[in-house]
Amino acid sequence: MKQFFLISYLGLAGLLIGCASSSSSGIELTVSRGDATAPYAGTYAGTVSLTSTADVVGVGATTNQRVESMSVQVTADGLAFLTVRGVTVTGVVDNDGSWGVQLSIDDMRSLLSEQTISRLRDAGCPFSIKAARIQGRIDPPGMRADVSGVLKCKRAEVTVATLSTAGTLAASR
Image 1 (tube, helix red, strand yellow):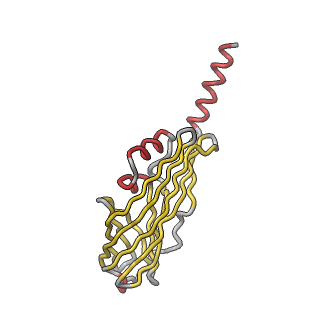
Image 2 (cartoon, rainbow, N blue to C red):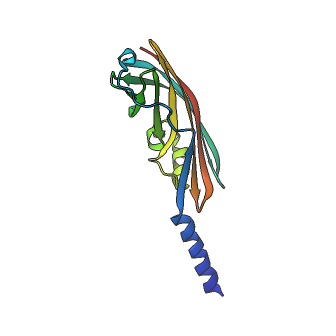
Image 3 (cartoon, one colour):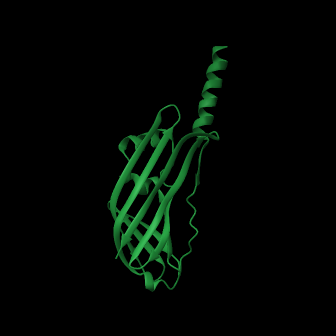
């Protein structure tokens, strides 16, 4: 009987460990790369305000609130390069001045506490898939955007951790 329970327990543990998945919402870009973005080209400097909450089942929630300096380099051929704390993420700009980038946990690592990173790692969250987006509008000489996204980390289709991100970005050239 002990063997039955041991085998059952190990089988269930293996299933939970082996069936990792995740899903994101609120991170899809509604912007496509343009080919005539010269009116928006330049370097914009400003701040990004970010609130991220990681809620791990059985452990609790941690919240990180940050305001960081950042820059966005916009090219004439529809690319945007967002740099925050030495990390650069590539995004797109359309011909009408809408722009956006998607961020993974790896991209946001410098904006999250070590406790949050540790909890997400322990929960098995994938650090390379997209977890948030920054999307907005360029109206030279300024630009603005909203930050949003929810990443749910799952084991055997059960959510074990959630990372929710919200905020704003404002910059000018």
